[in-house]
Image 1 (cartoon, rainbow, N blue to C red):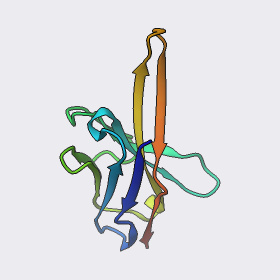
Image 2: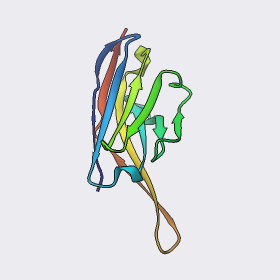
Image 3: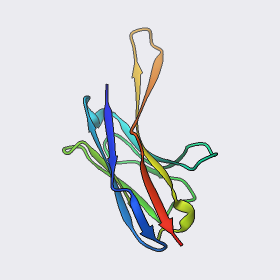
Length: 125
């Protein structure tokens, strides 16, 4: 079982910056693609950014591209999300996600997802 613990959330003014961290333990961190999702009350959780297991591939949702930078340090078992120029609408609970696809001897791929408990970001106007 992979455990994920987010940190770094808090209150920031509009236009400010913040860096979230997600520390992983329990399994081989470098085996997982990692992502940062966010959720506001009454809405579905949505992906903000993702990064491949080696860090060579990144993805950003259109809504955050140019403001978010995702990175990882496999030696420290940690993924980061640098957030800049934050607007109030980015206020949400931010979750760290680990995603793995395992193909068992039956040839069928199985997907596994692990989640942290979330860290709150509040951007004041």
